[in-house]
Image (cartoon, rainbow, N blue to C red; front, side, top):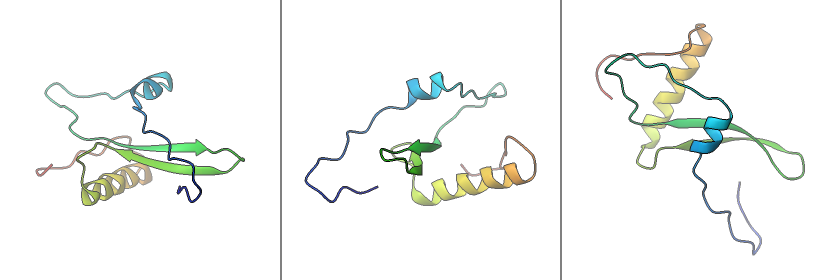
Length: 89
């Protein structure tokens, strides 16, 4: 989504309230904690177009985003809801 005319790009918005309103919840085991987040969002754009937005924690590196998206895809394809890795991040 680029802006090629003279209009300024919209200011980034925090997604916490939106995610809460949409009913997104996480079930964590005792001792588990979330360190990074990648959010996929179906975005209805002005004019009727639909896009996919990918938003993430500020310091999350591209390779970590890719790995998290890949793990999520694998979990969905195998019928699971959550994929726990071993070791690493």
